[in-house]
Amino acid sequence: MNFGLIVIGDEILSGKRQDKHMAKAVELLSARGLQLAWARYVGDERERITDVLRQALSSGDAVFSCGGIGATPDDHTRQAAAAALGVPLELHPQARELITQRMREMAADKGVAFDPDSPDNLQRLNMGMFPRGAQIIANPYNRIPGFSVGEVHFLPGFPVMAHPMMEAVLDTRYAALHGTQRQREHSVIVMGAMEAVLTPLMEAVEAAHERVRVFSLPSVDHPQWGRHVELGVKGPAAVVDAAFDDLRAGLAKLQAKLGPELVR
View 1: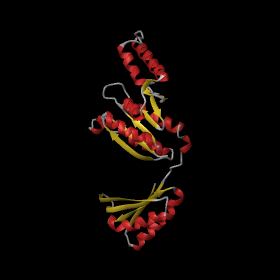
View 2: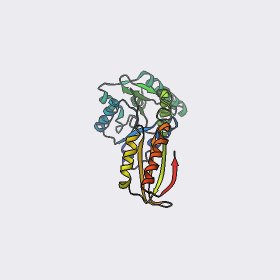
View 3: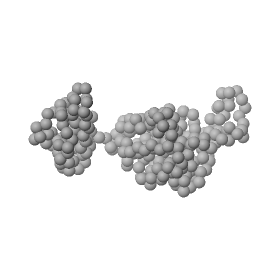
View 4: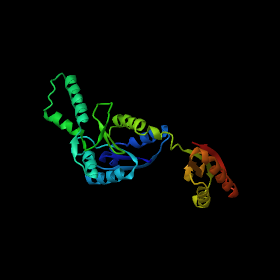
């Protein structure tokens, strides 16, 4: 199973806020021997969000969608998810209980009586309107839940809420997958190299080692190594060493000037 990430919000695309979700998703997945296969950024446009979610829901991937599940006019994710699924939005009974509990706590903190029929509280219940058949994701920060539909998991845009929720989903729904995508990288710095010269070698190594991918990271102004290419292989640990040996042998034939090796 592949893992994907969708980050929703105009504030990310405009630069008003910096995305913190992708780096955290990579960190959480990597710690569990898993990998992020793809990520997409979408603004607050309902039709575009619907299209992206329709693709995610049909992909078979495990996808985390962060942002837009509130109840203000610029929050479109819940409605877009329902449209992508072709089902109505419904007030989830467990979400209703959790949101009501949160509203009682807020009233108590302010020292006022709880009024479930106040306009503010009725508006807050909209945050529990999920596509029919959704399952809730507990929110340890303020009780306002996210939700899952199939393998797509909808989280708030706030990192302080979304990241513990993402971690909990990984440790429950996908615990059996932990360690199954663990990768190893072995690379070497090739001094003064041009990628065009290295490409035939890269293609040959990748063709000879089915489960290995070859990569090159060029640099023109590195403070220590100057112009160079970091050339390497990545894949399951059991097959990386043989592929790297072939890569080194090919570099020797090219009489390439080599710098340090890097293992990750």
